[in-house]
Amino acid sequence: MSDSLSNRCFTYAKLKFFTRMRRLLSLNAAVRRETPPPEKTVDKDMDMHMQLVSDDWKVALRRSVKLLHFGSWEERDAAAAEIERLAEDDVSRRRTVAALGVVPPLVAMVGSEMAARRGLAVRALTVLANGSST
Image (cartoon, rainbow, N blue to C red; front, side, top):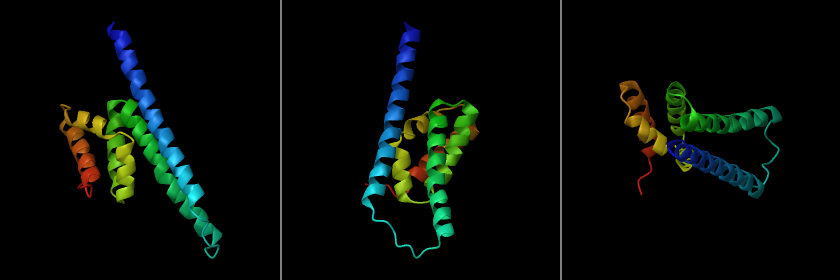
């Protein structure tokens, strides 16, 4: 009974995670379709570099969110530090990170017995909360 309930909870968490990831990717695709193409006055090499940097944080965010949800404790620690680093840049990234559902796992890390893990989680939650007064 307990194993089937545990499997259902895990399956539900995975389904919820991948649904949010699909929604994020579809929103990004919709934004790309709606924005007009920029003028071609910028050097193509610089434009390619900016595209790589733009896509770089999205890849890092996806990897970090996945590790935070499904990784070992050490991977969760690294993911919390990475999420903190990514969320420091701007408010839209903070909203994106929060929309992906990282707050509950970070709150669960705050309840950990290890002080270092608690500190990582609290710092990440603090960065996510900055500028989000509603």
